[in-house]
Length: 365
Image (cartoon, rainbow, N blue to C red):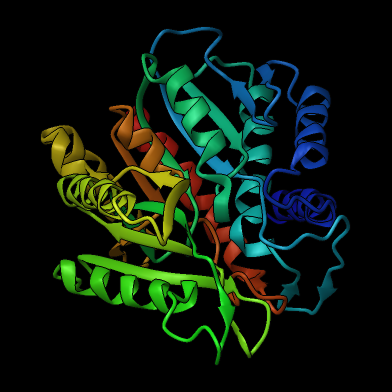
């Protein structure tokens, strides 16, 4: 085990230093592909123009179990420094989700080295974070949906899991008016005022509730000066739910709003979609879904770990949407996700390796 951990940490040391902001994952993807080509020659490798990399360990067997981790991170750094302590490594993105990529790379290498063909396909996907809109997972889910018996997306901490996907719809909302002087033209519509009123209308339109359906205005900009009636307003809007039906109603309401505003000649209103993640869950798969849940609970129990099920928005959304029974769970522990103080607990990596091996074995049983 000590040798395995040394090899995993050596991969991680190289991988985490390669900056991989969303939409700019190519350098990290190239590293993953070239490393696998050198170290796992028995695997059938693929690499697409988006930056997704995959390793097929089945020798083309029709049906496979799919493992996935995402390569992108949230900060724009082209190079990342690691601060190493005896028990922790600190670096942006090291826990979310670079360590899972390193574990899967070593797992592919060792599995291929045994010379056995096993029904597994491993994907390293782009575009999970921010406005990536699950670009890579969507592509892989569409490409392999007919072959995938099920999928395990490795993200989060080891004591967490998700079998219910939080869907989301994200829009940039823009309003425009004539504008004018704050004193002399008072009474004319103000785009920022109109935006604020519309946000309150949205708040009242649906029974928003934490854990069921939520909305958030994350950014807002507009206007040119304190004594100028704002001629423009623009904000980014995120709505989430675990219910596909709710998201469909919400989207229909947005389109109705566009129609209502189109009747006004003193105000323009437009929506631009900037993100869409489907909702869904294992409950739609009956006994197959229950089997995956039971498998994950058994693995964590054997390792002496709790398993707390929660609703998340991850790559799992994309696979569930394409009809692939999917669970999400983690292979390491850390904290500070999406901050520059993010860190990985080194002792958790060995247990994560054991968890990965057990999941693979139980899928084959």
